[in-house]
Structures are given as structure tokens and as C-alpha cells.
Image (cartoon, rainbow, N blue to C red; front, side):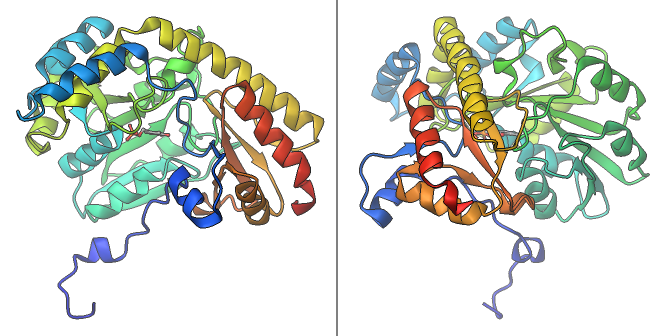
Length: 365
Ligand SMILES: *Cc1c(COP(=O)(O)O)cnc(C)c1O
């Protein structure tokens, strides 16, 4: 390795650690009946409308996809009352986060994000050799005043996930509005709304899209991986002023979003019945998990998303015991939350299975 001309940003990179795939646990433990509650995926399975659209789309994969995603962008523009030139598509919203870093960052620039923020922010920052400025969290959430105070002449991008992953904390309207007003207009603010659809009906939720007209430096990212149930297809999007979208599109690989994903996403967007059922399943599941954890006297962080992060003093042992019981959750040592595990909200039976496995293995605590 010493002789290879490795880019030093990449050589120093701490790779992203994904949730353990079901197939891997099958291979390692010889288990067959496995519940994965590790990557905040939708427990309802694929939306029926998306499935039909995918089946039709596979007939034409001998063709390249529309590199401009014309139809999907049109559908998203109608959905959000935006213009098509305010949308950029990504191979998952992680791809959009990477595009933002490559477009707006360089080694002399600084990026602000919170302690316990999504793991992809430090990765895309490091990849382009920019400097990460991590601001201490306040009660597990973003401390927006401290983030404002961290702004310097070199600040180029600020990443904020709302709600945040892996803590599930929420920033409310007043706080986000006051923050946007105070950030200098030449700094890019990214509101990462991967979980917005679970709670945007709440009057206090600050939907980033509502602020785009007022703030040409704002980028809102969303994904089809969570509530739309298409994590395996890889498709997400960014919404911003047409000026920002124009430069992001220059950095984008021409065919970054595949043909099947474009068709599925358009259909999923229109499957409001599936989305409503998903919200209901999640609201009930959060309640079920919270009650279960309360009953066991386990501390957890109140969550507004589709997962709960709970305290487990011997978290790595408990994680392994749960794996042996066929339940995959997410260790958070990579987030410097070594005493915590994150469990995604499943359907009623999956949540029950997790809680039972937890009860049986509490001595690992
Ligand atoms: C899951 C998640 C994403 C979405 O990632 P995709 O690449 O769209 O699958 C983005 N941001 C946060 C905070 C997430 O938790």
C-alpha cells in the first residue's frame, strides 16, 4: 500500500459502517428468521404502485436512463409547487450530499455540523479535504446558536438533519427560521429532511421547501429510501434555487439515477395511501417501542423519526445477543455513543420480537 499514490483525503477516511444486512447474519450465524431494524427502512415492504412501475421499467433497461430525469422532476415539481429547475436527483440523497461537498468545498473551506450528526457529513467533507467543524450538541440535538457562533470567513456549508439521525431530535419552526435569517447569504445551508414525511403534518415542523423562495442559499434534501420504501434502489433529491441546482448538475454524473429507480420513485410519490399507512405504522410503532422501553426502565431519546436510540450500558454485548436472537439493531460507537443502540421502528410483530429479545437479554446490560 505504501507505494500506491493514494489520495491523502481518502487514505485518512473513516469509512461509513452500514447496518448489518440480513444475508450476512444468515451466513454468519446460520439463522433464517431474521428481523432487521438497523437502517430505518420501511417495514411495509415496497409500495404496490412502485412495484408495478418497476416491473414495467425493467422491459426498457437496454436503454440509458433519462439523464435529466424529466418526468420524475416534473412530478416532484408538481408535488412541491416548485419549478423543475429547482430539483437535482441523486443515487440516494447521500449522492446529493456528496455533490454539494464537491461543488461548494475545497481544502481551504470549513463545514459546520453538529456532534451526533449523520455520518455522511464528515465523510463528504473529508473526501474533498475541507475542514469539519463539529459543534457540541445540546440535549442530543443541534445547538443552532452555537453553530452560528462557529461561522468564520472560511465557512462554506452547514449541514443540519431535521429530524436528526441517529438521535431523532427535532428542530422546530421558530429555531430554524431564526437560524436561516442569521446565516450570511453566501453560506450554503443544507436541511437534510430524510425523515420529514413522518412528521411534516405537525404544525411546528419547518418544511425546508417553504423557505426556498426566501433563501437562495438553502438546499433541502429528501429521499425515497425511508417512508417511500425504496432504500435498495438508491434515489433521493435536492431542492434549491435554480442557481444552486445549475451548478450541482455540472458536478453530477450524467446517469447517476437509474431508469428503474426513476420510474419507481414517480409511482411511489403518487402512492399517498402507502405513505399514509407508513406514517400510521410508524406512529403506532414509536409508541409501542417507547412503552416497551419505559416498562423495562430503559432510557431513550425521544424520537420524531422512524427509530429510537436507547441506552444500554453494555451496548456491544447486547448488540451481539440480539443478533443471536435474529434481531439486527444499530450500534452507535461510530457516533461516539458507545452506550447506545438505535432500533428502527418495525411493524407490530417486529417491534414485539425486538422487545422480547431485549427482555431475554437484559442481563447483557
Ligand atoms: C437515511 C438518511 C439519508 C438518506 O440516505 P439515502 O442515500 O437517500 O438512502 C440521508 N440523511 C439522513 C440523516 C439519513 O438518516
